Image (cartoon, rainbow, N blue to C red; front, side):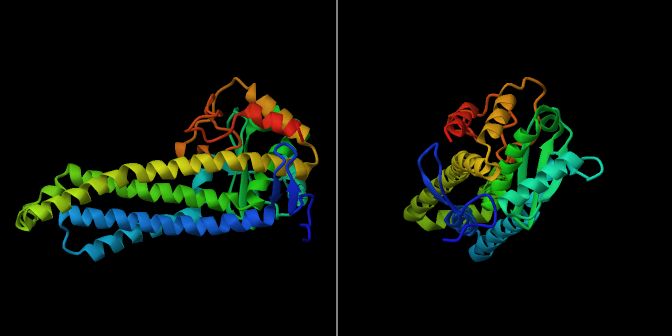
Length: 326
């Protein structure tokens, strides 16, 4: 297999885990999973809409299901085409310029050459908390944002390690997959909230609906009860399972991005030192919405980089130890 025109090979063995990693297969898998997530979203939304139509005796079930899928499709398109702009705006990032941020732009361009990807657009976040994230839908349309605190805290080798980590997410299409995951969770939550409001305002209890249900007899009532139970279960479990999938995927991808960054820079110690400095930081936290926290280099909330079910990032110390074993 030919290697990429960069310092990062297409196939390498992670010395920390002993796992052989084929980045071409991994990138292709990310693109397949991105579309699979879109189809999964449509299927879940269709199931929710169908069950709701059966429970509420909506006459035009097909139209209702089609409307729900259309809502999900619109949410997915927004997530696919505008997720980078939404994430940058949510983080309060502003465009970096060569005049004001020459050092950061130079580091980013140098790392992009090593990663074999086009140089992304660079943004700066006005926060003293050290952090960074990458966004976009492919290497040709991507952005990296870093905080002022990161620039002040790290030396050049450490900053290169963090930028290389984010560049690995771009090169491997992690940014696209995570955008589709966010869109999936968001679409399901939108429909759930609509259903909850419908039920709260008496949508199930309309007079015509009550008459149709009463005409069905015992078997119809029991069947409708089963439908209602399935609807409630799906409303509760669907967003929970989607969120847990997003969290688990995020943690695994952080380890791989660390390993890829070490290969790009040929300096795992630089990234390890950056993680140590960020771990020991005790200043103000970065205030961002929950929807974008998983995208950052480390979780913006102190104490959330740990091993538990709801953690979006692996433990910082474990990441340091893996890099030091490379």
